Amino acid sequence: MWTWFEQYRMDPTTWLYVASLMTIGIYFRFSRLFSIRNLDLIGIIFFAPGLLLITHGLEGAGYSWLFAVSALYLIRLLVDPAFARRPLMEPNLSSEGMTFMACALMFFLVANILTDRLVESQSRPETPVTESPIWRVPAHRGPGYLPFYRAITFTPQVPASRTASEGNLENLENAETSTLIVGAAIKIVAIAAQCFIVFGLILFGLRHFDNVKTGLAAASLYLLLPYTSQLTARLDHIVPGALIVWALVMYRRPMISGMLLGAATIVFYPFFLLPLWIGFYQRRGLIRFLGGYLISVGTLIILLFFLSPTWHDFGNDLAAMFGKHLLRTEGADGFWEYHWPYFRIPIFAGFAVLCVSLGLWPSEKNLANLLSGTAAVLLAAQFCLIHQGGLYMAWYAPALILTVFRPTLEDRTAVRAVPRYWFGALPKLPGQL
Image 1 (spheres, rainbow, N blue to C red):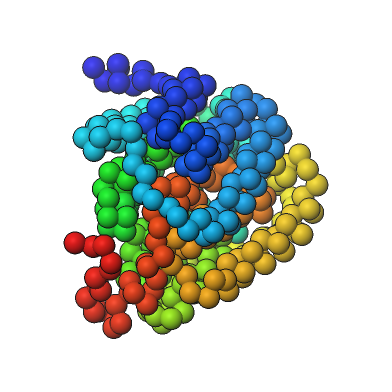
Image 2: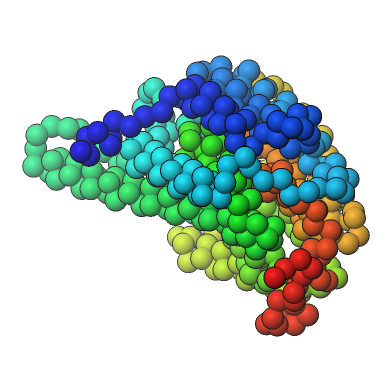
C-alpha cells in the first residue's frame, strides 16, 4: 500500500493543463467574459508557463517570462484601489463542492510533500545536479536571518569513505539517521506552513469578506497553482508566506499583526512592508503594531546572540539580518544570471520609492489598500532578488488571490475596524451579523 502511495507523481506539464482548465471551469464568469475577474484569472494562469520553462532547463526564457507577467500584474495591483465597484463574485461551484475540492487538493499537496525527495541535498557543489533547475537551492543566502537559512538547508553529511570498516559504518549510520530526522522535520514544517496558508485564506474569507465560500475559493485557487504543486517544501518560500497571511487575517489586532509581520522578516524583504502598514495604522493602532513588530525583531536578535559562537559571527549575521549584501552581484541565480546585475540598482531605487509612496497614499487606507499594497510590494521585491527572483510566489500569491476575490472594502479602515484600546473588544463593522 505504501509503495503505491510513494509512486504518486504529477508531471508539471500535465498539472499545468489540468489546473488551468479547472481554474477556468470553476472561477470564470462566462456571462461577463471581459470582467476584471476573468482577466485576473488569465494573469494568474500566465505565471505557469514561466515555471514550466525553468523546469525544463530554459531558465533564461523562463525567468524573463515570469518578470514580464509580474510587471503586468504589478500594474494591476497598483490600480486596484481605483476599482470602486467590486461586487463579491462567488465561484461556479456550490459551498459543498468547494469544500470537497479544497480538502482533495490539500490531500494531494500533503502527499506531494511526503513522497518527494528533498532537493536541498543537491545544493552541495560536489554533487552533480540532476534535478530540475526550479528546485535548485541558491548557493548564497541572504540578506535575511541566516540561522533560519542554515536550519532549512537540507545537506546530508555522508562520510567520504564508504569502506566496510566498523567506524565508517557507524558514521554512515549516524549520518543517515541525522538525514532522516532533518528531512522529516523539514517536511513536517512544510505541511504545517501550507496548512496555515490554506486555513488563513479560508478564515480571511469568513471573517473579512463575510463569506466562507469565497475563502474556500481563494484557498482552492492557491492549491491549484502549478507553483504550489512544484515548490511544496521550500521553507524560505512558504514560512514567510504563512506569517504574512496571518498578519492580514489578524489585521484588527495590531499587536498580533505586528508580531507576525516582524517574524516574516527572516527573509528580509518584508521589512519593506513597514511604510504601507504604518500608513494603515497611523490613525489608530500604530503604537500597538510597532510594539508587536519590535518584539518579534528583538526576539530574533536575542536568539541570534545566543546562536552565534563569536562576536564576529554575531556582527556578520546581524548585518545580514538588516540588509547586508542587499546589492551583492556575485552568485546571481535566476534572471540576473543572464542580465547585467547592476541594473538592479535603479530598479531597487524605484522599489524603495514605490514602498514609500504606498505608505503615504492614500492618507486613510482600508483593507483593500492593505491587501493590494502587500501583494504589490512583495511582487515588486521579486525584481530586486539576486537569487531566483520571480520564484518566491508564496510571499505574495495569497494576498494577490485575496485581492482578486475581494468585495468592496472601503469601510474596513483602522479607525472603524481596530479597537480603541489595547485589549478592547472588536468593534462591529457594517454588514456583520
